[in-house]
Amino acid sequence: CQSHLTNYYLMEYIKVAKNDYPNLNVELTCGAVSSEMFEMLKNHKLDFVITDVIPTETDEFVIEELKKVNNIFVAKEPLKIENVKELEDLRYILNFDNTITTKKLFKVLKEHNVKIKPNMKCDTTEIRVEAVMNGLGIAYVMKEAVKKQLENGELYEVELPIELPELSINLVYIKDMLTQVDKKFIKKYLKNK
Image 1 (spheres, rainbow, N blue to C red):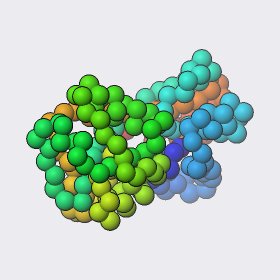
Image 2 (image 1 turned 45 degrees about the horizontal axis):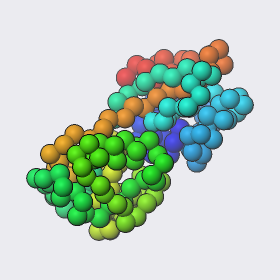
Image 3 (image 1 turned 60 degrees about the vertical axis):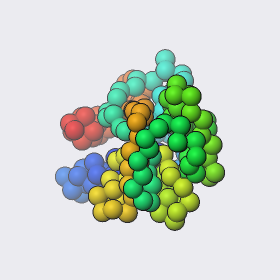
Image 4 (image 1 turned 135 degrees about the vertical axis):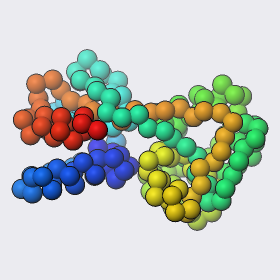
């Protein structure tokens, strides 16, 4: 599971599972990019992958949507954008251009004839959030990842006149390769929500 999804999505389910089954052993791979995780899955080094990326080689994998998530722009101070073209005047902290999240964002902005250029790129949600809190610009992140900061007023969701794209958190696995423990964890914790 990618690190940002582990922190803000998967960890709560692992916690409940470990409370229910204290002797359960969990092995997490969080530092690899999705393509590496899919390769590890093919080589049976992982049982399943939780990701917001759809693998390109879909024939080999079963892909199930677990949850829809919203991405938002966050700022250190309250910010309301009245005209979408105002977005071109801001400083951005974004993920890399080749990520599905950034590609979808650029596609939506292009539909509104808006082009933005980041002044900082970082592939870690936590670092992008920290950069915003240090006044380096606004960041594009999964809303669930900044829930606490939004609630306690450390960050503010940028108000926009357009809708930003939704993403899905997906479960990816190879048919007939899940263990009984995998199946039980997925059914009881991931799909039961």
